[in-house]
Image 1 (spheres, helix red, strand yellow):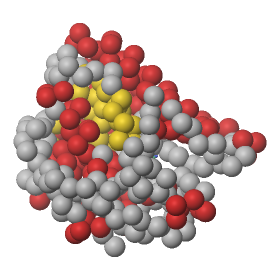
Image 2 (cartoon, rainbow, N blue to C red):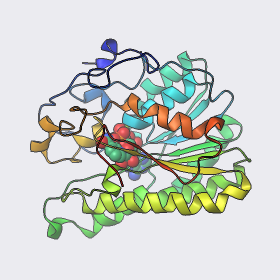
Image 3 (cartoon, rainbow, N blue to C red):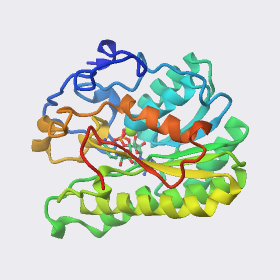
Image 4 (cartoon, rainbow, N blue to C red):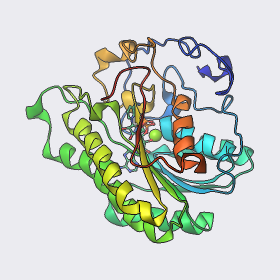
Length: 303
Ligand code: NAD
Ligand code: MG
């Protein structure tokens, strides 16, 4: 099921409680990384609903984890706002990435496809150079790729998982920023995906949640360092958003049917509901916003 047919565009006055249906996902499992193509129910990434208003006209953006979920919604929104987009994702996610690339091209923008595993330091460098080459430059970076594997007992959290989660979520982010900086002119933006987990860690996500706290701190420090160069750094903290991350061991299976129901809005978020936050922080209209983490949580409070 794709819920997008039921939704209005993001600029139409609506009740946020009922803009998207409350979902009760069945228990399901996908190997890591999960695919949007196989997620039940399907998600709204804005294909039929996101309306651009020219806010990113002529921009050149690299987005990691851009094949599915939040990254896909951001890629679609950026293209509809006038940007050319380079998409990084894992090779196993080609099907999802091709779908997003098709939507970008339908919008009349360029999509550059860059499958690569960011666990590898050399791959981080290559992703940036291929994006610069494919787009003819770079002035927007969205560090959105993330690894989340739920582990009930801390004794079962292996060294391997700890290291991989930290490498993908925070070390790769630092490597990509370092590689991108020589290419970013004044006016460029970096937006990092953190999480409500940075403030309210779930007991089964100790490794993941602590990387998200690190991303918040990294974003605030880097924002101050890069401000004099005219490069703005911000972050977005999603709450519970229905994406493939959740069914590829991101949540305990028993938790899936209840996913997102405990938010004040009473429902999980859809990926496209994140896109306007990334668009705002990338667009010149947020020129005085730096080191901010914008919470998009359905009302769950962040400090
Ligand atoms: P998703 O599974 O659709 O996206 C995560 C993406 O990360 C994958 O598509 C994959 O391309 C990428 N990725 C993972 N490991 C990688 C690796 N080794 N190399 C390259 N890419 C890799 O799920 P999503 O929920 O849209 O996640 C996007 C971001 O949002 C993540 O950083 C996640 O932590 C964050 N987030 C999600 C939620 C939520 O409820 N869905 C809440 C808070 C934060
Ligand atoms: Mg994916």
